[in-house]
Image: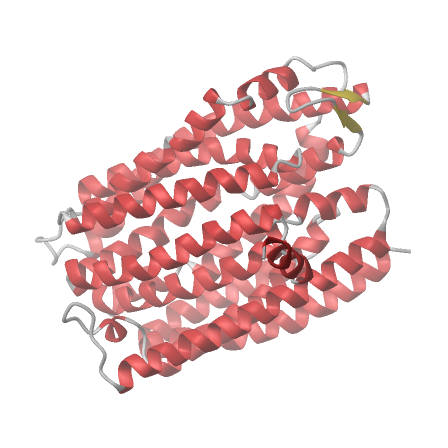
Length: 454
């Protein structure tokens, strides 16, 4: 039976890293469904709007992180290709690569320590400004202290996330996935417990800060701290020059990520400000489910980044394309089939008026048409994201102009159509722009792949 499972997993592209990532995504998705239920049961529709708008504003961390974690993974993977590992905490090989790896680690820790402090101050200020201005008529909602806790947790997570990205670049994708899996279980258990104890808006912030502690404890109590120490002392005359090597790549990624904020994170704040927290809550709950579907399917792609980068470093483009095409097909089939199942489930809930704990769960989501307008971009963005990942593993960012243009147009579309047509206008405009982005991305992907693999 075990052999059969392993054989089947291999055929559909599930390795150890994907398995734990999928388990983590499964827990996240299952927990998301359970969380949706307890939110519908314990929070008012107004509180639900605050809950999901919290997440959209927390996403301004993009302006601080600026895509650097992903870049770190790729740079580390390129240096790691020249090293020979003796055991879990030491290696031999290129002295230059060893020194550059140490340089990357030192840069990572120092840079993100400063950025995390700036993020905390930025989150605190933006949250109090936004909710103080647009939530002034919801005096019964206690959002201030939960917001402070979330700001602290998000900042601490930003400080630790690049270390995990560093480990992934070293090929420890499976181990990192294990930690994230365990973290998901702990956070989900705490969220459900705290909601059942009626902590309401405090539930998620308290669960998040307790679950966060798992990562630093894992680093400190395992061999990982010895590995980091070993790499730290490998510094020599060779350094990674941030200004000449990382920044020319990062600023393009950063602008793409910032554009992504204006594409994906404006929906809730705009609806909160124009339609009120109830509609914002419907959008937030719908996006939570759809983003979970996207994340599960994209696990096939994201866990392959170190391998893609290694193959590129070795100029093995034939193997790269075979692996990428197979992975993209598998993940896209999963994405589409899961979206179809989700739509059918919501249809059945609404058609038969199915209730959970006496609450009509399906009414907490967007109506059919806006929901469909959001589902189509989830499918297309999966493929766009895969193409972008493939190209960025070459240490280049050819989709910058596209990201900027689509981000600008989406911002205008969301604000304008949201003001006059609400959720229907926002989602329809987003779908049309995503279709245009898909066509543009395909042209870029085909052209750059032909140009770089001569």
